[in-house]
Length: 100
View 1 (cartoon, rainbow, N blue to C red):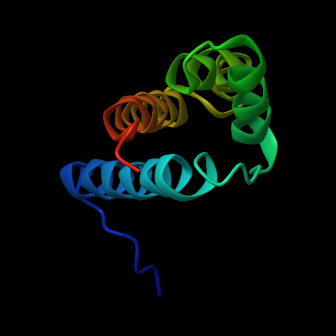
View 2: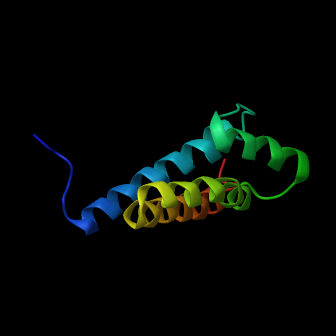
């Protein structure tokens, strides 16, 4: 039985909620305590620390090649959801910056 929400508004609302929670965790727990995350976010955290470039911007820059490749392989629907999630995550990282 498929339990995923089928309405696009619900899907995007859940993507936004998940992106906001992940961004909050990164900005309020990992970055202030200098704990590295894995993957693109971890690389972005290191580069942000070394270069001073905002993590929100690095997240978009570092994820762009993966979104493009995913879009080629998986189609428009994936690309739309990935871009939305990445933009929401980056906006929330910027929003939560400095709260800790």
